[in-house]
Image 1 (cartoon, rainbow over the protein chains, first blue to last red):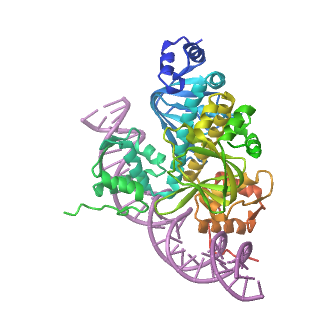
Image 2 (cartoon, chains in turn orange, yellow, blue, brown):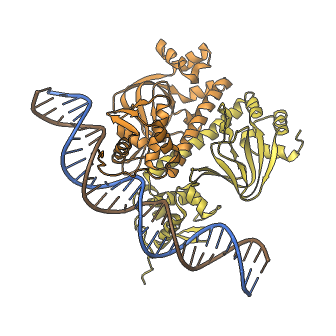
Image 3 (tube, rainbow over the protein chains, first blue to last red):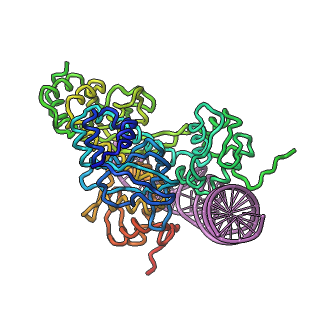
Length: 241
Length: 241
DNA sequence: TATTCGACTTGACCTACATCAAGAAAAGTG
DNA sequence: CACTTTTCTTGATGTAGGTCAAGTCGAATA
């Protein structure tokens, strides 16, 4: 029996559980397990039976698919407060469709799926929260899918930065560049070249994992209209002065 | 007030509504509208306010995204019995994220979203049906997304045929080849070449929209292992005899 | 049966991006 | 602070698949 008071707190902080009364929450908490992951450690692998889903409390976790040849495609970066694997609740013989690996030391709470499903039956409100979450996730995924076949790499990078920076003129890459690249379905080398190109055109400037947007209109233009890069990706374009 | 008895029947045949009692179902049916679409006619466009979702009764409808330059990416083919647009129920300011266009004369039932959401609050079972539907759709979409960056066109075609044919050794393309191509994120020209290549290798044979699988093991091999085509796509490989 | 129109195919060519192979920078580590 | 390891960058080159243009085929229409 899990009497760890902090589990309750962590659950309560999460939208998905916020509609449940204390008694219900405690029952769920009883069947949870806290898992600590070191950087690079795997939480589960593609194909593993999925008897529980997770709430991230600390660190970062990447969800990624893998081809037989070992190539990876990062599908999602989990940050604290997010849940993952809940969608599997509703499949009959659920197995994780992706790998989960910690990008930095992480801590997650594993919630028993069957247990939670039973609770769900008692709370329509929670059903609605979950429905909302899954809907948004579905739309975002569909958008990524169409973006991938409709837009070039440069364009997807521009759109990503534009969204990531929202109203600010600066943003930090919270994960290694190669991971960002994979999320955008771009090879690290190509991603590097795209960044350089955008820099050379005075649209952004990059220092380490820190990106400054110097020409937002141009970035937005690229993000929307873009089909071919404005100045195609060139090797060593020197600043003519 | 919609007293059309056939609407009730059509709703009842659909999983999403099958758990509702007659009274509830009739209340929903009262607020539905039957829409008949000619081939090529649009049901809604990307960006339209989404006040209702739909149940397809007849025909085929393609859901597709469009780039500023007019390029299309087909995301889903709707067939009779399927619902679409329900996920928008749970967004605050819902707009259709895709275009919907009839591929052949079609008939759909439009269900008022707010109306249905209210009903949903009364039926946890229906929530679960919906959760199941959205989960599966999410997983399929995620798989397509990773397949797109991990596998070649040939491989995606092989996988598509393998799945479409399940246990049979034959399958019919239910939509124009260019639409299948777009679903697989392949240009019509390339799709044509891939089909020819698979034919030349004796893996399938194609006559019109009819595909026969002549070498299933080879097809499955391609579908799983494939990163480069086994015999790369060649122009006019003649049968050497 | 001729004719039109769209869907499909084929060829020639091109390009965005991947791959391979070194370096250069960071980031850890002893 | 040297030393290793990993990440990132850069260049040279290759290729899957896109683009453009010209057929060909087939179904629908006249």
